[in-house]
Structures are given as C-alpha cells and as structure tokens.
Image (tube, rainbow over all chains, first blue to last red; front, side, top):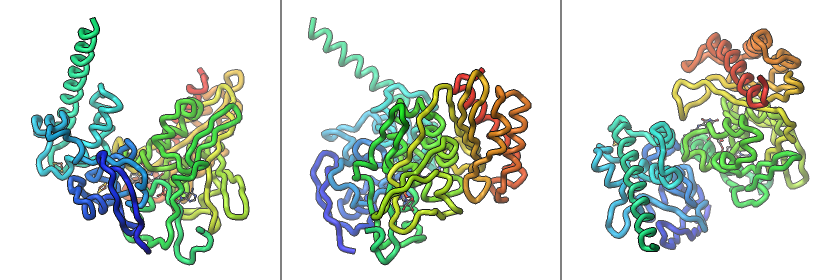
Length: 171
Length: 271
Ligand SMILES: Cc1cc2nc3c(=O)[nH]c(=O)nc-3n(C[C@H](O)[C@H](O)[C@H](O)COP(=O)(O)OP(=O)(O)OC[C@H]3O[C@@H](n4cnc5c(N)ncnc54)[C@H](O)[C@@H]3O)c2cc1C
Ligand code: FES
Ligand code: FES
C-alpha cells in the first residue's frame, strides 16, 4: 500500500509525515519523529505506556493509526514541561519517588494530567480509576497516587493565590 | 468500496479490537475504511421520539451526554465499562457489537433496551434488532459491504429504568465472566414490560423471555426475584474455563440478573 501523507499538530507545532497506512501512531512518533518519550509496553492497549492525547482525549498511541491523525492535535510527554520548567506533576513524581525503571512514567503523567485538567480535586478512588489503564511493575502504584494527590493540592493552592492576586489588583 | 475490495476489508471505528488483532497478526486487512469522519456516524440525537447514537461515537462521548445517561443509565454504564479511559476515548458500541465477543459489555444492555441497528449498504438500508446481529463468537449476520450507521434506542416511557452488571475478578479492565442487562417499565407500581439479557454465558448474548415473564405483573417481590434468578440460571449454556466453571457461571447469572432487575426497578421509581 502507498504511504499516506499526514499533516498534524504535535505539542503545538505543525508536523507533516508520511507513513504506511497500517503503521501505528506510536511507531510514527517514536521512529519517524524521534519522540521517544512515548513508550511501547504491550502494543495492544493494555499497559498505557504509549498514552498521548488526541484532540484532548487520552488514547493509547499503539491503538491509533498514524493515518488517522490528519488535521488533529496531539500532545505527548515532550510537551509537558514548559520553557525548560518541569510541570508540577513531573516535579511531584520525582519528589514522591513515583518511578523506578521509568518506562511507565510518561504514560502515567499524561493520564494524570488529563485527569487533573478535568477534575482538579479527585478522590483517591477517582485517581485509581483514572489510572487503571496504566500498568507499573515497579512502584506498586501507591507512590504514584500520592504524587498525583500532592500535585492536585499544589495546583489548587496556586489557583487560589492567582485569583486572590487578581482580586487585590482590582480593588 | 468495502464491497469491491477483493481482499479482507474492515470498517475501522475505534480500532481497539481491530488494531489489536492486526498487531497480533490475526488479520491482514487489504482495506480499512475509517468511519470516524462521517458526520452521520459521529453524532448523538436525543428526543422524545427516541435516541440515535452514531456508529463512530466513542464510549467517552456517550458518557458525557447527560440526557442519554438519564434516559438509559444501563446502556451508558455498560458502554463505559469497556476498558480504560484510553480505550473509552476510542471504543464504540457498534465496534463492541460487531467484534462479536460473547462477553462484550454493551451488548446485553443494548438488547435489554430493545435497541436496533441501522444497517446501510450501497443498495439500501435496513433496521435490525441488535440481538439479530451477532450469530456466534466473532460472527455477525452483516453481509459483505454492509455497515452499521447507528444504534437506535426506542422512545422511553415514564417510569422506566435499566441497569447492567458484570462480574469480573478485578475491579477494572477485565473481561466479564458473567453479565446481565435488565430494562423495565412500571405501571401503577407493577412491572408492565421487561427484558432480561445475559452475557458471557453462551456463544452470544441471550435474551431470556422466561426471566422477564417471571417479573412482569409483580412489584419485584422475593418470589418474583427468585423465579427470575432460576430462569436466568436455566438459560445459561456457559463454557468451563479458568475464569469460571459452568456451575459458578450458572449461579452467578441468577444473582446478577436479580441485582440488575432491582437497580432497574429503583431507577424506574419502583418502591
Ligand atoms: C485494553 C482493552 C480493554 C478492553 N476492555 C473491554 C471490556 O472491558 N469490555 C468489552 O466489552 N470490551 C473490551 N475491550 C474490547 C474493545 O475495546 C471493545 O469491543 C470496543 O467496543 C470495540 O470498539 P471499536 O470501536 O474500537 O471497534 P473496532 O476495533 O474499530 O472494530 C471492531 C470490529 O467491528 C467492526 N466494525 C466497527 N464498526 C463497524 C460498523 N459501523 N459497521 C460494521 N462493522 C463495524 C470492525 O470492522 C471490527 O471487525 C477492550 C479492549 C482493549 C484493548
Ligand atoms: S503499548 Fe500501547 S498500551 Fe501498551
Ligand atoms: S517504574 Fe517501572 S514500570 Fe513503573
């Protein structure tokens, strides 16, 4: 089959690539575009190591075809730090020792970010359900859950400070 | 296109079954037709006359539709049980149906709801009850070139409720060992109509009219529930495997049928 030409947006940048129609988005990101933060664990949707967002929704890039993302927006772990500054989730994963070998980490970070963007105050159960599509063979999950909880608290405090500052500017 | 392809041709919806089978080398499609950009397949319409869910609508999108979730909580919760959040972003009810696994979660709930599939081809369109689509594990009644465009749920009378329960060894991300879907409507506190469906206990999901008859006319008292459970167990033709023995599946089918009926009854406002 002939290669498909695809134009898409990745972490805010316009990107074009050509790939065989049956090639996964995971293979495109890693092997064609050098975005190797996206990991392959199983290749069949079970482990979540390959998690990215597609138009804001969390997906396993191993279960998306490269050809499907024409005109869509993709975000990967490479876009999470801003201007060289780690995202609070990344800081807290380090702080809480929420990783050992690290292969699952980019997937967990993407899933946790989608969760916190939608639900800034998740319960522990909500966190565990939201991360159920991500497997980790090293940490036993508890440290990951703590890191997400700590980030949620931190981000909420940051929000409060911001809104207080806005109010005081107005008055 | 699907009709004229000489090799293996497949519709691609969420790809959460298809791409796994390709990866594992079970299939080597010569043609994939992605339906996710077809507007008629991408939308949900919900009115007093009924609900139409496009074949490319993902589980996550369905779950976010408040009005449908209110009218058909059982169908929506069944669909939302499919896989992780990652899978929910992509998977469809129709893909779940056409993949034709005996344990597919949305299927018993759809059948209980009296859902119909709108099947289109180059030459026409037919509307088929969902229970007529799957004919056996991995097999459907769809002809070459036929595609499901949407799932249609009937108008919902007042005092109706539905529910879906599955039994799995883990709490998330597992395949049903037994499952049950129930939909019912009340009249003056008594069950007027009901449909009871079991999943994972036979080669296809099974509609159990005897279980529905056991509760129709009742207020879902102990006696009616007991008869429903017996009818559910009697309808099982399960397999014996490492995930559940025949005796176990048969017993659990009765228990799940009962519990699903109780939830549906409460949701319908029954006391
Ligand atoms: C990690 C993981 C967990 C899972 N967990 C569950 C679970 O808990 N419960 C469960 O039931 N399933 C589960 N599944 C299986 C799968 O996600 C579901 O069956 C899903 O609903 C399939 O939908 P899809 O849109 O991805 O289908 P696809 O893979 O796109 O298609 C499946 C089949 O249906 C055909 N098809 C799709 N759309 C149409 C159409 N409109 N007309 C005609 N044919 C069509 C395709 O050609 C293909 O043969 C899981 C899968 C994964 C990878
Ligand atoms: S590599 Fe995609 S889910 Fe495991
Ligand atoms: S840190 Fe090794 S798999 Fe999670």
